[in-house]
Length: 164
Image (cartoon, rainbow, N blue to C red; front, side):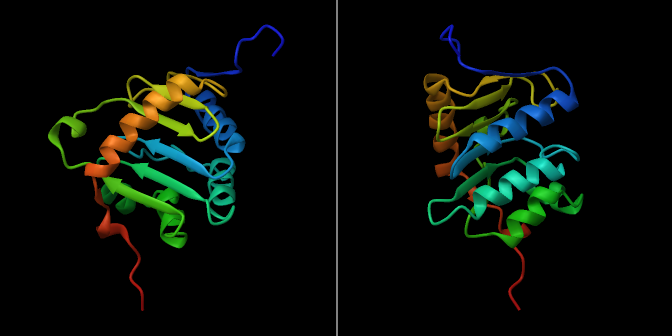
């Protein structure tokens, strides 16, 4: 933009949040971090969002989509489409569950990409979100927190597909 302000990602309802998710995912080249305490039905499972996740997951050897959620089993039981996609593309999409009580109390949600984009929801159960497509400072702070939780989290073994 000519005024030096990075393109914003803001949402205040489900449709706006979905559009912001798709916009951020469409900008990403190979890597995305997703922290959602609860994968609610309809969240990150539209055709457009899943198409972008699939595009990223099949973008080559650098593809890496990491998802942290507090209850992967419930999302799996509910038939969440993102979980089903992760089961089909396990080398590119990994899901972990935090085990530390402090991390399990974390009530916000966010997405980041490797290009400096982020989308942050202060209250994960609400649709209100703010973010930007080019704000590397905030993106790296969120990604650093994600990495900290990721390293201490356990893989969501229960939702892995059975190899027969």
